[in-house]
Length: 409
View 1 (cartoon, helix red, strand yellow):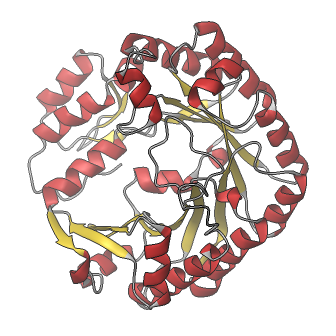
View 2 (tube, one colour):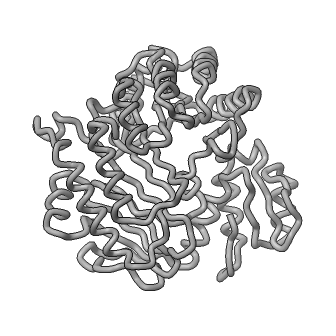
């Protein structure tokens, strides 16, 4: 893996551009604004107070549209159709619906797009109303992802979420009324002070809201967050690993009984059509361009990341420069490791280009199950293996002989 300074990022290598052809390609748009910062959040986001009272949202859509034009020029003439667009954050709905739609329109004007283009917008339950949802749907958004996190007020308070219990249920109802078929709810388990009853209540509320997709993530204590400081000072306990495993297993049981099948470690969907295709693109290690401050991109083994601050970002694109802070070229070993780390997460199975004896060890240890005895064999994580996915990936990576022709996801 070779790290390179931003100044040397002038154009994508021809070898990287060649890999884009015929492979799903996505656009990620990072909207780095929030009304307030949650205590556990370590994302590149800014509140008005972080920006000295200035509201930089007003010029953001124009800056994003400029970067989209620069991206299209950098990719050259053979870029494949964009299959997915994902607005993440931050809180994308901190922007007006018309601004989000204008960014989407810029993507559609600059790039060819797939006939079944998936367009996802993340939102806090209290950041949209029915009018906004109607505008987003009319503007081409096809999928919404609401950050519910918990159905209990005490848990939401520890996470410093701005919405109240019941807000997510109302948001899903309004989204369905606005014509959205695909709606997801995101949950977090393992918050300090959360009980088994709290987690059950959150699962029950999420299912009752009737989304067609549910994500459930173990709380991670990120460095330099308010939550990390509270844990460090002993004001809150650190999440217990055994409790996290138990909560995950319970979520899988409850969601499966309600008709949701897991397709990735932290994601369940009612049907294949309800899966988040943009995230599947990531897990298959395909290609995407990240728009916005701090956004990351990956094309053909070249990875880069944008400058983090909205001021610096805006100045760069206004001057006609890609707002790149740094980039790296992945060698064969790093690319194989990434494919394993990502592919191992998927319920569709992943191919093991390793010794049959190592495959047998993974089976005997109860970590994987055979999907297909081929050359190479295809396996899927067992329930136990899903809790030890990083360990499985490391064992596979250590046993892989380089170079390999492919590591199919």
